[in-house]
Image 1 (spheres, one colour):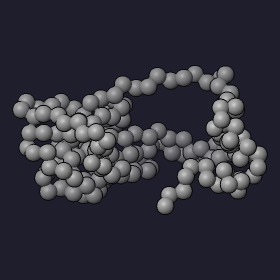
Image 2 (image 1 turned 180 degrees about the vertical axis):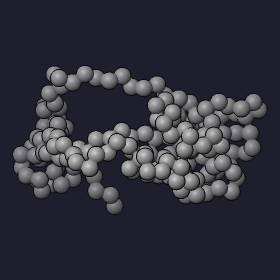
Image 3 (image 1 turned 135 degrees about the vertical axis):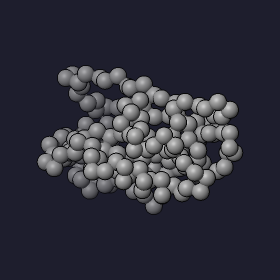
Image 4 (image 1 turned 90 degrees about the horizontal axis):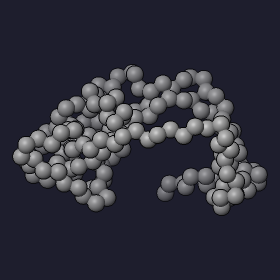
Length: 173
């Protein structure tokens, strides 16, 4: 069983002050100081199409999914033109399945070896932030017999050492 986020804080294992600050944060009483923060606009989302690993949609159907445009641009070459499509080919149809999630690769670049101390807005506890930018892109099977793990290994190899962390987010259909 997975441990819920902030479990140790709620149990008081990080101190009573952190527990109380987190409870106030959840109740909406402790608002973070955002006076020096400038909100960023969310990047545009791009509609993409993939052939899922877990279910056969037939030769003419693809699963419709999406990714943020900067993420797709960064990871497009590594994922490959046969695993994700940004344009629906003639004669193909897109299918949206409720609660279905295509397999995704998540990659983080720019991580430093020396972090900076940051204070949590939720608990008031200090943590080390190593920076970096994270990108994720969906992918599907390039052939009818390709497995999810094989495709991920191929993508991870294509990404090389430019990305410090590369993770697979498994398909859910």
